[in-house]
Amino acid sequence: MEVKVKKLKANALLPTYETAQAAAMDLYACLDEPMILHPLERAMVPTGLAFEIPEGFEMQVRARSGLSIKHGITMVNGIGTIDADYRGELNALVINLGQEAFTIEPEMRIAQILVTKYDTVTWQLTEELSETARGANGFGSTGFDKKG
Image 1 (tube, rainbow, N blue to C red):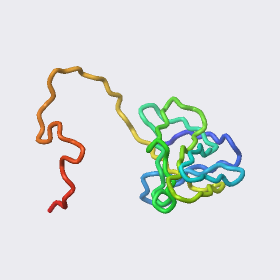
Image 2 (image 1 turned 90 degrees about the horizontal axis):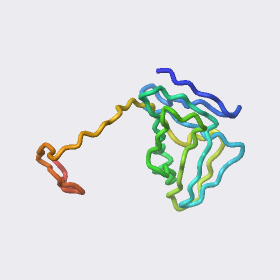
Image 3 (image 1 turned 30 degrees about the vertical axis):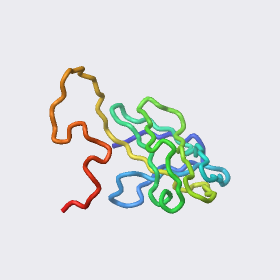
Image 4 (image 1 turned 90 degrees about the vertical axis):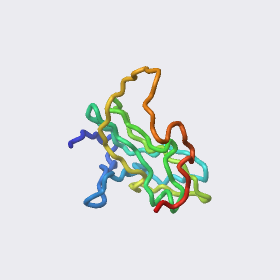
């Protein structure tokens, strides 16, 4: 799949796959100087890029697992969605859930992106839903024990 991308800043780096079978591409911070993110602080990290996502697709912005587990750096909104009709700069919305300040360096891999297809939903109002073994049980109803 080809996706149009526009560099909004000369020093912006295009997203890259880091391994041959990676599903998501790493997204780079487009900064002129380091950005310090203190514990519980949120920030919009610019990428210097804008995208033209094809109709019927979305771009998901996700945390990088290494930054999350080692430093507590994750996405403010869990997973961000870039819609096909958005043409502005992509910013990674990050939060520091760690206990120490974290420095985001220029060109650091700050998040990852995945372009995925979606279907548009229409609602069918009904009085009845089909029965399942689980029914309305939720919130831990399947237990926590090892299966086997």
